[in-house]
Image (cartoon, rainbow, N blue to C red; front, side, top):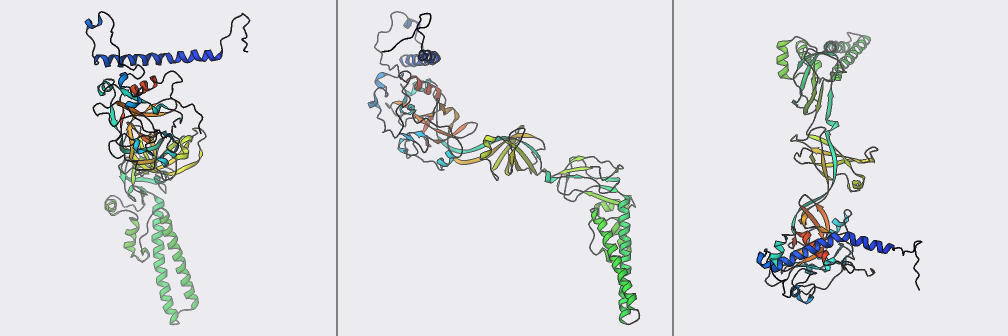
Length: 536
């Protein structure tokens, strides 16, 4: 025996279940109204040939003809394949495929594919693709795939706005997106200054100029250079003199003309000359000069000319010989091929070793620093291909991941990833921003449908596949409800890793109409779209 407890005012309280029921009815009322209007339009279109009746036809008594019309499925009752399954025999149900995550899997049962010829299997491993990253899953208890969406005729489907497209194979790329900034490769950026204090004698390169490796950018006139050259010239002369003396002493010592002591003193002096020559040569080498071979054997006049224009290319030598008698010139050279990105130098200006005169960068190879979200970090690995496009929609640049930070940035909470980008066409510029695609998978023959073909409910993803006999005269005009698994996406297409095969025809434009009819036909009585039996 049950007991009802009254409230203090004597009224019976409304149970929470009643509140929930009314709330669900209130929320579902707009959908019911929409589906009812849709059903009325389908009924009206079927009986009027989709033409407005004349005004005279609207006068008089209501229609008295007995309607051959299924109000649940919006087709003539005599043609309704849902109400009369014998009109459209169905294949035996195969259940839910746990491997691919769809019901009535055409990958395992290609005979279910709605194609006229032999079904074509995918050309790649869809199981591996499904396992690459988390995918939207289908509820195994969702039973909407057992339903059919039927039209009274092909013409009525067209007038309802339903258009179709063929499931096709096309190249698709699955990727992780990340924002990034382009910068010069720090290992290919040189900040140049004069090695010694002096005065700028000549300026040959300025901002924006391309330079080759070793090319002279400017000439600096420095007394320190002149002094170092003079010391070298003196050291060479002493070296030659002491070498000649020790040679004669050795001959005389062999003949007994000089003592061993004199020979030893001569050899010691020659060694000192060798050391002085080495020190003088090294002093100039430390300033960046390349020393000619066998300079210690040069004649005095030849040596003086050689040291005066030391380090200068022949074309500059010809100009300098005409314009100045100075032997104090030191060239400022580019260490590698690149472009002048800063130039703070003027002829006649006094400079020191602390003055930055040029910045040279090699723009043919750039760095791209990406900020990858922590959720995507697990998919990133060294060597992966990266496609980058700046915010100005420049041409796509390709590169490879070269480094992944071992720590997450404290402020942005993102993972820093460095990519090396080729930039031989020099379209990328330092300090520009853009979006990168870190390629996880590339499929040259992915199974795809237009994005409009995808329809979803709360627990499943569908496409509507046109029956292979649809265009035959007298055949029921039905669309099969097919669960699918989504893979890669681009601007216009979606890869389907399971659920369809190439050559099948799916509803594209107007597919929401099919979903609306599918859901409408399942309203009430627990909707009938889920299997409520316990799962084994």
